[in-house]
Length: 214
Length: 357
Image (cartoon, rainbow over all chains, first blue to last red; front, side, top):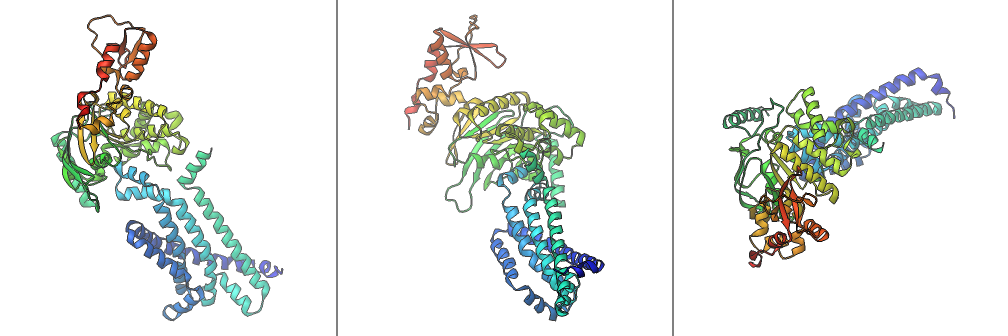
C-alpha cells in the first residue's frame, strides 16, 4: 500500500473532499423536500402508494453510469446532470423509509391526537412526524451514503469532487492516487454515517426509548 | 385555513350567546355541571356495509349524567361515541351539545372542549407525562405558568404526584398509570363532556376496579357529563347513572342499573345481565339496589357493607356472620340503609319479564 500520494497532497484531498461533501449535501437537500411531498401523497392517497414505490424503485434499477450518459445531451456536463442523477437515486431510500415510517405510527395514537383537537397539520407536525422521525432519518442516512458513493461519477463529467482524483488516477495509471481517493471517500462516508447516527439518537423518540431502558 | 378560523370564531360567539358548551377558560374553577347532549335520529352507514352501524338512535342526556354505552362488540356503541366529537361523521341525524349542533362547529375546536380517553391510552410516546397532560391547554394557547399549574393539579387528582411523574415518559409507566395520565390529559381543559372508549379494557381486574373508583370520585368532584363505552356489565353497573344497552346499531333499553335489573326490556337484555342466573345477578347488583331505608332503627355499626359493593359479597357477609342484617354505608362511611337476607332475595329473584322473548 503506497500512501505517499495521500500524505503528500493532503491539502488537495481536503479541498476535493469538501467539494464532494458540498455536492452530496446539495443533492440531499434538493432530494428531501421532493421525497417528503411524494411520500405524503403516497401515505394520504392510498391508491398511489404502490405506484409511487414502484417508480422510485424502477428509477434505481437503471445503471447509474448509463443514466448519467443519458442526461449529458440534454443537461450538458458539470454539476447539473450530476445533481439530477443523485437526487433521482436518493428518492428510493428517502421515499421508501418515509412511507414506512409514517404508516407504521400507531393509528390509535394519531386518533388520540385528532380527538384532543389537533388540526391535521398539528397532528403531522407534533405527533406524526416526530414519531416517524427515527425511521425517516435512517432513510436519510442510507440515501446520503449512497449519494456520496455515486457522486464519484461527478468526476467523469467535470462536476468536481473526489471522483476527479479517482478518474485522473486511473487515466494516468497512478495507483497511489486512486488509493488516496478511495481512502478519502471511505473516511467521508464513515464520518457522515457517524454524524447522522448521532442525529438519530437525539430525536425525542430515541430519547424516550433510552429513558425507558433506564 | 383562514376561512375555517373565521367560521370557528363565529361559532364561539354563537355559543357564548346560547350559554356554554365551552368554558371560556378564564377561570380555574371547574364548571359546576356538564353539558346537556341531545341525539336525534343519528345514523351511521359505513361505505359498503349492508346494515347501518348506528341506526336512527335518539338519546337525551342531562348535564352531569354518567352514561354507559353497553353492548357486544359490533353493536355500534363506539361508532355512536365517536360521532359526538366528530371522529366519525354521521350519515344522517343530529347531535347537539347545550343546544349547539356539533356539525356547525369547527371540528378541532369542538374536540378541544370534549375530553377523550381511549383504550390503549393513546399517550404520545415521545412526550413526557407533563407534556402529554398539557397538550390541550397548549392547543388552547394557555400561558406556560397556567398550564404547568394545571398539569400538577391534574396529576395530583389522578393520584400521580407531579414530582415523581411529570418528567417520565409513557413507556416508563405501568398500564394503569398510563390510563391515569390519559384521564388527566382528557380533563386538562375542564371539558364539560367526557368521552371514554373502553378506557380500562386492557387493564387487570384489580387495577380496573381501582381506576373505576377514582373515576367515580373525580366525577363526583367535577360532575361533567360522561359517555363511557364498555362491554363489561359489572363496570357498567358500577359507574352508570343510566345504562344504554345497544344491539345491531339500535338502543334496546335506556335506564338506571336498578331499573334494568328489575325490568329487562327483552330476552337479549336479560341474557346480557344474566337475569336467570342468581349468582351472576348477585355479583352484578350493588348493595344499594336491594337495601332498605333505615326506618329510624339504630344500625349495628360493626357489620357494614359499602353501597356500591355487590350483593354476592353482602350475602357472603350475612352467611358468615350469622347476623340478621348488614348496615349499608355511603362513600363517607355513613349509614344509609340496611340489608337482610329477605331484601337480597327480593332483589335477586328473577324478574317476570325475563321470560318474555
